[in-house]
Length: 324
Ligand SMILES: Nc1ncnc2c1ncn2[C@@H]1O[C@H](COP(=O)(O)OP(=O)(O)O)[C@@H](O)[C@H]1O
Ligand SMILES: [Mg+2]
Image 1 (cartoon, rainbow, N blue to C red):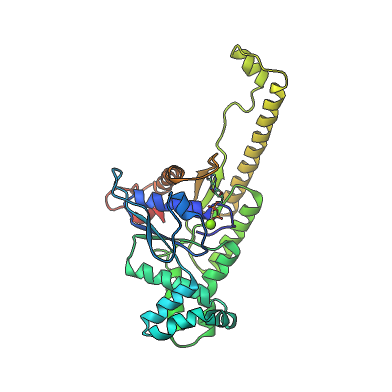
Image 2 (image 1 turned 30 degrees about the horizontal axis):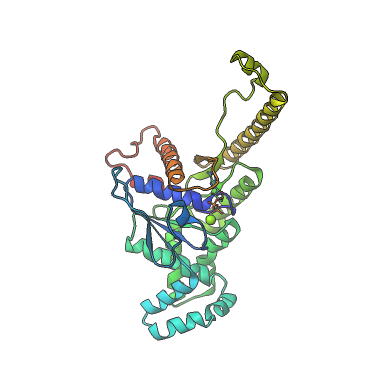
């Protein structure tokens, strides 16, 4: 999951995790930037490096668990050293700030530590689906590019092996796909198109469907004159009300036009399927909103997979990877 900050990456990660869980896939969401608000979306207290269950499965809908954890480069380094028999130095090294020194000399080392851990989790089969709530777009490119950079810089040793393993993961569309998230607005759409092309060209990672988040729903009757509508309903408007309603309708029509324009541009410039999620008019998003967005995403994903000649999702033998 990648995209400009504030476009809804975390919200979309939560919603797709719930969507996958509703399909019976155990799902692990990995957060790398901290304070993402992911736990709140599930009505849970904040979590840390230790894995938590954000949304328990096993209810009447037969859903699976949604689990989550945070990954930081320091913790990943400690774990890596401990797994490789370097118990005694691991904590001291991490707490000494040595990683920051190394990171200055070898940019990308922190990213590779995180991606290496993600790869290890993927290989261990800890969940059917792992969703990584990635850093904001600019950093996402260098983040995903880090293994190739390291491969060029390091010729032997564990770092090279790690980088190669991560590259194998990124290169395999059956194991890993990047979903880009945007709002139906000019700047995020531009940034998404740019990111999509650099990810495909420089990183070589496969792109899944694009998620367009925060779509205003169509409202019927925006073109109707308020006075005429009131008259037809046998009601009277107070002085000034007609003008206010007309201004509100005009504002919304304008917003809908801009949205349609950006959607058309995105479809025209980027030949990827789209998952479209509505803007929810509420101050605080919680579990019921995540569920609503999950159901919307699932409907879109089912429509995407119902191509002529292919089996529908849920049909015997259908690929479970539709929610990726
Ligand atoms: N579909 C939506 N409807 C309404 N508000 C949304 C929606 N998606 C995201 N938001 C709100 O927008 C803000 C940014 O969302 P977030 O998922 O944290 O973005 P990001 O992770 O990309 O920074 C949050 O306040 C969130 O509640
Ligand atoms: Mg976020």
